[in-house]
Length: 348
Ligand SMILES: NC(=O)C1=CN([C@@H]2O[C@H](COP(=O)(O)OP(=O)(O)OC[C@H]3O[C@@H](n4cnc5c(N)ncnc54)[C@H](OP(=O)(O)O)[C@@H]3O)[C@@H](O)[C@H]2O)C=CC1
Ligand SMILES: O=C(CO)COP(=O)(O)O
Image (tube, rainbow, N blue to C red):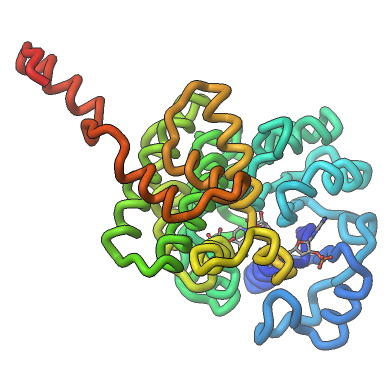
């Protein structure tokens, strides 16, 4: 059974490595012929995943048709803002019964669509029902070193989710299934905003209390938007919710957190983006989420302040003040409502 991994950044390379461990026949597509050539020559992706040997069983190519030839599974591990153009081209070579897995974490700016929605729009109709989403706390650097990791796969059809679960699961990579595609995808995308904010807080010299506050209040506003868009609230207490928020806000592997640290220390967003060839999804997702929150009338104070800092030149310290000095409120409206009902009181 052949799997094609589209995208030879750190995540695509780690996934190709994992699937090869699982005995699959794997191809890895790199956008630039030069990168494909480098990986073939060194059997290592020195640009994106240095120090990890790439099996010579993996076919590394920059030719999409060659990568996708005969593939039963296609894993899309490309930056979210490039997903549409790449899947459109890939769709010409994907077989109709293929299972297609989104591994990217983002929302398309402008259309405000999730990645599986973008894929659905661009793929031929016969491919559209076999789309799955893989998400959860899974830094490529650790997966490639076979460190125990747990993630979640969501799909419309249970059989599709289970096929992907079987494909990926092994002794160091545990995969759960979940029917809530919206929740799994929204959690994976939105956590990057919180990771940037946690980085900014660190860059400003704040401590563990601040990070814990951002993680906790962050997952609350992520859940608020996700539920408004049709997600199940419990999904956000799972791997693609709080799990991914925790890892991204704490890990030094996180590009989003690292970008935030630089911004907190005084670099501009442009400088931070120009300083790396890696994708900082949260910068784009902040814009998309800000627009989605307005469209759905959802209160997302952290996202709103992140938007101010990233897109309107707001001073991060002013953003912190704006968050801390908001009018006092209840921690959880739903708890208050339940208590009021239980006690038949209106004291709250
Ligand atoms: N890294 C991780 O640990 C994880 C990442 N993800 C998600 O996977 C997705 C891919 O990220 P990741 O593998 O980390 O990427 P990296 O940051 O490691 O590498 C960037 C990749 O993006 C490609 N790229 C850059 N600009 C463009 C463009 N304009 N069009 C097409 N491709 C472009 C680069 O190709 P080139 O070299 O040709 O410029 C390279 O393959 C993201 O959505 C990310 O959130 C999900 C889970 C874990
Ligand atoms: O999604 C990730 C880990 O689960 C990767 O996060 P970064 O893009 O911040 O590195």
